[in-house]
Image (cartoon, rainbow, N blue to C red; front, top):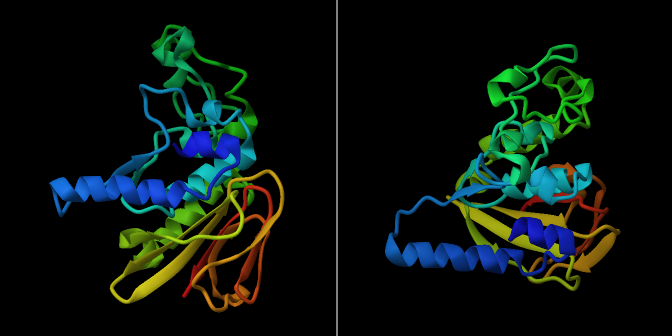
Length: 230
């Protein structure tokens, strides 16, 4: 449902949907662990489903890593690999391109490799050196998840706002609560956050794109994300 919502620019009901799924799981087993992902080796790549838009891929990564459960990242997803199963499963199973000049063993996949995708810019080496790369966004949000227990283990509570593009929720665990905000839309959004008396820019724990606050109102640039300590 995440990729569909991003493509439609509608985030307002995402947290409610996730909470609903978790309540279903909990009714069957109280100690369930929600295994969350964007895609796997038997599905079209997430980047393919998101129109190969880097901005949307970054948003999807940020949502994955600020959602409750145990996130799984399919190899290559953190580099922006694309591909669909139409020509065979091999097209969603390309090996990692580690260096700019390195090659991948296409023979191992029967030649079913999209070499246009495997450019020097998509390599680990190139993205490692680019602070704004998708790979480094995954690292940044993973680091925040490892640092803040509410992000890693918190239970989700949907938060309403005055803009349908904005996805909002809190995560709480062991006395720590964070507010998660994502803009699923292609334009700048500003909205008041229900139940939050005041936000502060210096309480942003991790973010991507433009994020600012004014009292209980948050402003996010296109496909931007921010996590606030409460």
